[in-house]
Length: 345
Image 1 (tube, one colour):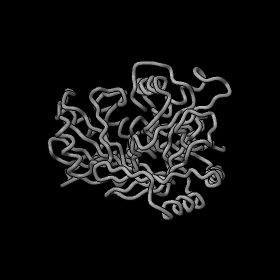
Image 2 (cartoon, one colour; image 1 turned 90 degrees about the vertical axis):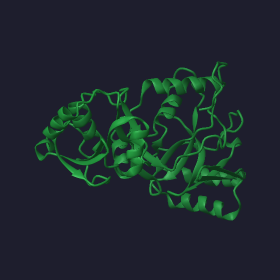
Image 3 (spheres, helix red, strand yellow; image 1 turned 90 degrees about the horizontal axis):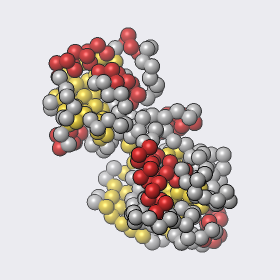
Image 4 (cartoon, rainbow, N blue to C red; image 1 turned 45 degrees about the vertical axis):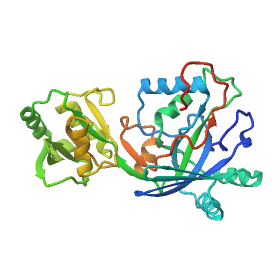
């Protein structure tokens, strides 16, 4: 599969090469990442690993139809390509960035590539990418894809503003789960049901589970380690390589009676950078009675899942870096319909 990865369209134009590529560097206390800002043509071949929520896609689609451009990149990753990495590194080392923005403790820097020869050189290198995988932005990508058959002429194209990084540089954490205090929880009954499926032990503090069958639970300020009993290992009915699938089947579906975690008003998704005491504090601040930490999936497993056409539930992975909004504007490729919402996507 060859992807069409073109410059950012900063003006409305049918010529993809009118815009600029941007070398993109993100630096924070958590690390530093070097990648690329570009416009990736939507062809339903960008590989996803999470299910999507229809209502959220509809909201993004309406915004796109309203304004026809984006300022919030989706984040994609690909198997590391040394030639691309070397090209981006050379550009970033040769001169000062053209755009710098700081959000709290995170610095975002862009180097514009507008030279025609450099753009063509980079475009050729990008043709060596064999697979593009979504790290962040499943719903925004789905919104862009939804425009293909119904809005555009057959010869037109849609491209989505994207931040691209090699798989070796991304950091993946779990998008952990919490249960709101509004959920009617009988703690004695809950612990009894939990013990049917898990060995439960009290631990001193937070930890990242060592296996896919282990989970850390916080309840009432106490920490617990949950280990799925061996009798259930072969009868999970879940994808055992993916911890979140086991968590939702046994704890949310079987114990708590929550059939659809993505649509439940009683469930919250906790961003992966809340760790340890930060996770417990998040639960208190958001009035949650229960919290669950699961083992994150690695990039290789995400690619394997996406290549097979399988999906995790919505909000299962929390992946760094997080691309900044508003650094550039990108026209997706059609004339916007005059409507009410003026926010960019």
